[in-house]
Amino acid sequence: MSGHDFSCAEKRQNKFGALAPEGNLPEAPSQPAPRTVTIIGGGVAGMSAACALAEAGYRVQLVERRGYLGGRASSYLHPGVNEVIDNCQHVLFGCCTNLIGFYKRISVDKKIHWTREMTMIEPGGRRSQLGPSSLPAPIHGLPKLLSAHAFTRADKIALARAFRAMMRPIPADSSESLSDWLRRHKQTPGAIERFWRLVIASALNADLDAISVPYAAKVIRELFMNSAQAGAMGMSSVPLSELYGSAKTFLEEHGSAIHFNTNVESAEFDKQASQWSIHTRTGTLVSEFLVIALPFEAIQKLLPHMPLVPHCEELAHQANSLTHWPICSVHLWFDRKITDLPHAVLLDREIHWMYNKSVLQPWRDTRGSYLELVQSASRAFAARERNEAIQQAIGELAEFFPQVKEAKLEKAALIKEVRATFGVPPGIDGVRPPTAAPWPNCFLAGDWIATGWPSTMESAARSGHQAADALSQNGRRRFLEADLEPQGLMKILTTRP
Ligand SMILES: Cc1cc2nc3c(=O)[nH]c(=O)nc-3n(C[C@H](O)[C@H](O)[C@H](O)COP(=O)(O)OP(=O)(O)OC[C@H]3O[C@@H](n4cnc5c(N)ncnc54)[C@H](O)[C@@H]3O)c2cc1C
Image (cartoon, rainbow, N blue to C red; front, top):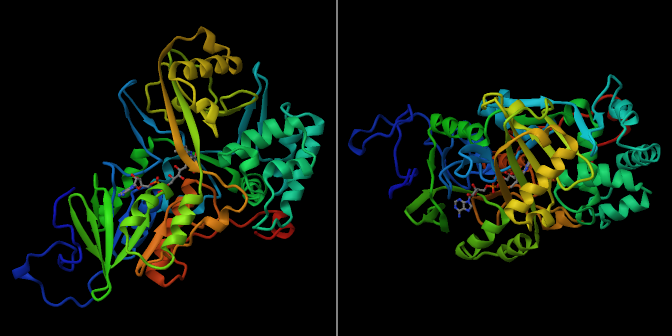
């Protein structure tokens, strides 16, 4: 959709929501006209804010630079392999209550494949299984951890000691890095390499010395201690763009407009009319409210073209303080089945995670298999040239699954997302801005806003719900979903940080 007359404030609706011609207006409506809001950015943050506000009766206009929704969480037809692939596997967990709430709102929650098991594989193929037992939280994962071959006795004792320490309150402003904390808590090389570096550093997508302890503790508590439900892992059974395409349907059914291929270049606020004008290359949009749901690098570009008000500089400083970390994914199509496992953690090599898309997305052509290998926080891997990176990944994969040596590789793709996520180093919370923007009637969303969550779809959905609450309810909570309650002994052993 594009054109010149974008202004939903200027158009008139009859009581059924259809646009009415100027000379043929129905009788004065009994209800006040819906309030109008423009949302910049069609990623998870913008979509979750837009859908919440549309449901609450706002007339929403969502403006997205690209031709589709999803932002960093999207898929596309890769011309080199002629397959629709996600720009990278995106996983969620049971504790992602806002993302799941958003999925329920747009009716895609049933499209998530859930599992509570995590298979760790050593080079050579020996497997260990992590996952819950019938014991109460936080010891529900203990039996499988104790029997895991991947860890020595000393590793297991060290991990148990660290988990216990992570249950104690950790000051939110702690300046200690995770690597220093692990040293202080006498973690063994095996525990560091095979658990902290592989599972936790890859969940937070940064090196151990660039991770703050409260964020690591949050991941440990939510994924391994609070409850088996919180730690369940979810993966979409359809491509991400199909999943998030349902937000478009939802918004259109709720009378919202989506302006694709529309880059917002500047915005100004008319104090007297209490109205925003949002300028794009193809026209100007007008609305009472504005939600800026952009990543920090896009805010950096937009800020010089926004009204100059106090606190703008602070926002600029905050946006300039964050650092990107890369994620790479190698997509491989083989002529035969390689494994029945839906996913696995691959130990001691550059490739970290294997996702078996043929199993997770069974509608795909199942004659052979499609595997996606993910390398988190992978600055060295991201620097590799395409063929070298793919050959490296295949060579390593064969160490875990010998069938790879016999199989014929039919096609392959390498996706490098150099600006995948922002890091969460010590002090990060001091530079994450609040939902309230420095301008009137304006709110910020995006995974980097102060949500307490690392750079994830959950943080984005949370930020969107925070913005919808702030805009519609003067800060009262309506859309922000409650966290899952800890279960079992965790109810009494800990209080939420
Ligand atoms: C490779 C990779 C792997 C990841 N893996 C996971 C994972 O497993 N689990 C997980 O939870 N998260 C994962 N993430 C992180 C997750 O994708 C992001 O945290 C989340 O999608 C951010 O959403 P957002 O809406 O805040 O920002 P974005 O998705 O960046 O959305 C912002 C939108 O704004 C648009 N835009 C920018 N400038 C303008 C403008 N001037 N005018 C109009 N529109 C504009 C952009 O086109 C974009 O669509 C991963 C990210 C990447 C890249």
